Length: 123
Image (cartoon, rainbow, N blue to C red; front, side, top):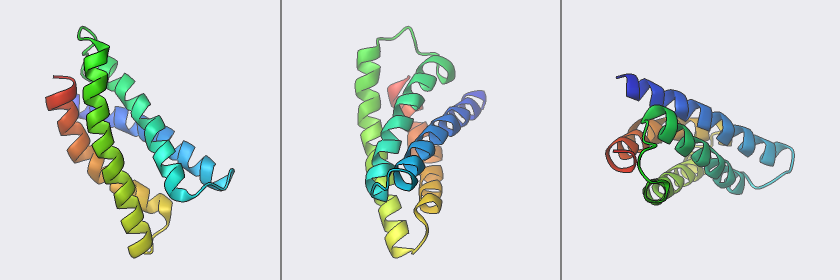
Protein backbone atom coordinates (compact mmCIF):
# COMPACT_ATOMS: atom_id res chain seq x y z
CA UNK A 1 0.00 0.00 0.00
CA UNK A 2 2.88 2.36 0.78
CA UNK A 3 4.35 1.76 -2.67
CA UNK A 4 1.01 2.55 -4.32
CA UNK A 5 0.71 5.82 -2.35
CA UNK A 6 4.29 6.81 -3.19
CA UNK A 7 3.65 5.95 -6.85
CA UNK A 8 0.57 8.17 -6.86
CA UNK A 9 2.54 11.02 -5.22
CA UNK A 10 5.29 10.65 -7.84
CA UNK A 11 2.62 10.56 -10.52
CA UNK A 12 1.10 13.75 -9.12
CA UNK A 13 4.50 15.49 -9.21
CA UNK A 14 5.07 14.30 -12.78
CA UNK A 15 1.56 15.41 -13.69
CA UNK A 16 2.27 18.90 -12.38
CA UNK A 17 5.30 19.03 -14.68
CA UNK A 18 3.22 17.64 -17.57
CA UNK A 19 0.34 20.08 -17.11
CA UNK A 20 2.57 23.09 -16.53
CA UNK A 21 4.44 22.43 -19.78
CA UNK A 22 1.19 21.73 -21.67
CA UNK A 23 -0.61 24.84 -20.44
CA UNK A 24 2.39 27.13 -20.93
CA UNK A 25 2.85 25.87 -24.50
CA UNK A 26 -0.83 26.38 -25.35
CA UNK A 27 -1.56 29.60 -23.49
CA UNK A 28 1.77 31.43 -23.79
CA UNK A 29 3.26 30.06 -27.00
CA UNK A 30 -0.07 29.31 -28.76
CA UNK A 31 0.90 25.74 -29.68
CA UNK A 32 -1.74 23.27 -30.85
CA UNK A 33 -3.16 21.60 -27.74
CA UNK A 34 -2.34 18.07 -28.93
CA UNK A 35 1.32 18.87 -29.70
CA UNK A 36 1.58 20.61 -26.34
CA UNK A 37 0.03 17.58 -24.65
CA UNK A 38 2.63 15.28 -26.24
CA UNK A 39 5.52 17.51 -25.11
CA UNK A 40 4.01 17.80 -21.63
CA UNK A 41 3.63 14.03 -21.45
CA UNK A 42 7.30 13.59 -22.40
CA UNK A 43 8.38 16.02 -19.68
CA UNK A 44 6.21 14.33 -17.08
CA UNK A 45 7.48 10.92 -18.17
CA UNK A 46 11.09 11.87 -17.51
CA UNK A 47 10.19 13.19 -14.05
CA UNK A 48 8.14 10.07 -13.28
CA UNK A 49 10.95 7.70 -14.31
CA UNK A 50 13.44 9.42 -12.05
CA UNK A 51 11.07 9.48 -9.07
CA UNK A 52 9.95 5.89 -9.66
CA UNK A 53 13.46 4.56 -9.90
CA UNK A 54 14.88 6.32 -6.86
CA UNK A 55 12.01 6.95 -4.48
CA UNK A 56 8.98 4.77 -5.22
CA UNK A 57 10.46 1.41 -6.17
CA UNK A 58 14.03 1.97 -4.90
CA UNK A 59 15.38 0.18 -7.96
CA UNK A 60 18.75 1.92 -8.22
CA UNK A 61 20.76 -1.29 -7.94
CA UNK A 62 19.55 -2.37 -11.37
CA UNK A 63 21.01 -0.91 -14.53
CA UNK A 64 19.51 2.27 -15.89
CA UNK A 65 19.71 1.22 -19.56
CA UNK A 66 17.41 -1.81 -19.20
CA UNK A 67 15.00 0.08 -16.93
CA UNK A 68 14.99 3.00 -19.34
CA UNK A 69 14.18 0.71 -22.28
CA UNK A 70 11.34 -0.95 -20.36
CA UNK A 71 10.09 2.42 -19.14
CA UNK A 72 10.22 3.77 -22.71
CA UNK A 73 8.04 0.89 -23.89
CA UNK A 74 5.51 1.48 -21.10
CA UNK A 75 5.72 5.24 -21.53
CA UNK A 76 5.06 4.93 -25.26
CA UNK A 77 1.86 3.08 -24.43
CA UNK A 78 1.03 5.85 -21.95
CA UNK A 79 1.68 8.52 -24.58
CA UNK A 80 -0.62 6.81 -27.08
CA UNK A 81 -3.36 6.20 -24.50
CA UNK A 82 -3.27 9.71 -23.00
CA UNK A 83 -2.90 11.57 -26.30
CA UNK A 84 -5.58 9.48 -27.97
CA UNK A 85 -7.83 9.88 -24.95
CA UNK A 86 -7.32 13.65 -24.84
CA UNK A 87 -8.13 13.90 -28.53
CA UNK A 88 -11.29 11.80 -28.26
CA UNK A 89 -12.58 13.41 -25.07
CA UNK A 90 -11.77 16.97 -26.23
CA UNK A 91 -13.19 16.64 -29.74
CA UNK A 92 -16.09 14.27 -29.27
CA UNK A 93 -16.94 15.07 -25.68
CA UNK A 94 -16.65 18.80 -26.33
CA UNK A 95 -14.67 19.18 -23.10
CA UNK A 96 -11.85 21.68 -22.50
CA UNK A 97 -8.44 20.15 -23.23
CA UNK A 98 -7.23 20.69 -19.63
CA UNK A 99 -10.21 18.86 -18.12
CA UNK A 100 -9.96 16.06 -20.66
CA UNK A 101 -6.23 15.70 -19.92
CA UNK A 102 -6.97 15.50 -16.19
CA UNK A 103 -9.64 12.83 -16.61
CA UNK A 104 -7.65 10.71 -19.04
CA UNK A 105 -4.41 11.03 -17.05
CA UNK A 106 -6.05 9.91 -13.80
CA UNK A 107 -7.50 6.79 -15.37
CA UNK A 108 -4.33 5.81 -17.23
CA UNK A 109 -2.03 6.69 -14.30
CA UNK A 110 -3.87 4.70 -11.64
CA UNK A 111 -4.27 1.64 -13.81
CA UNK A 112 -1.92 1.09 -16.74
CA UNK A 113 1.10 3.09 -15.49
CA UNK A 114 1.18 1.81 -11.93
CA UNK A 115 0.75 -1.84 -12.86
CA UNK A 116 3.27 -1.75 -15.69
CA UNK A 117 5.91 0.04 -13.63
CA UNK A 118 5.48 -2.26 -10.64
CA UNK A 119 5.36 -5.54 -12.57
CA UNK A 120 7.58 -4.82 -15.54
CA UNK A 121 9.86 -1.77 -15.32
CA UNK A 122 11.07 -1.70 -11.72
CA UNK A 123 10.49 -5.30 -10.56
